[in-house]
Image (spheres, rainbow, N blue to C red):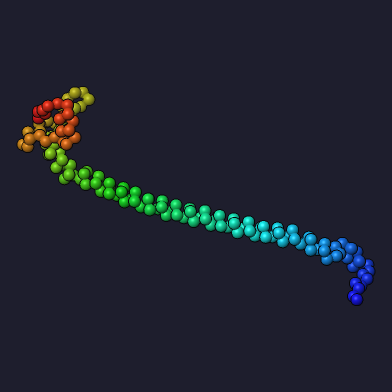
Length: 148
């Protein structure tokens, strides 16, 4: 039968610090294993939650990018419409439809009340007065006729 050898001096003092017996070592190992399993399980669950949150954020980002693209396209279409309506030829055509004529020579007033330049009246409109659709809708509801 094997016996442990007798330790002397410094080795004996160190041996007294270590626990003896097999059952005590087994009992101390179970809480440690349980702690490691709980930590690993908690870490895996934490990674799963983090990964899910990141995926959800990625989907929201894709949706927002798509919405931004749609709004940018709409803005560009509206800007093209504004540019078309504010082009000089379009303004001239719309002014003539409304019965407007080009102005004559301008005259300016000085602060002392004198007139600078020779004013001239605008030429008479050769075309009949055509009102805008908005004006027609408001006048038909309120007044019976419109005179030019």
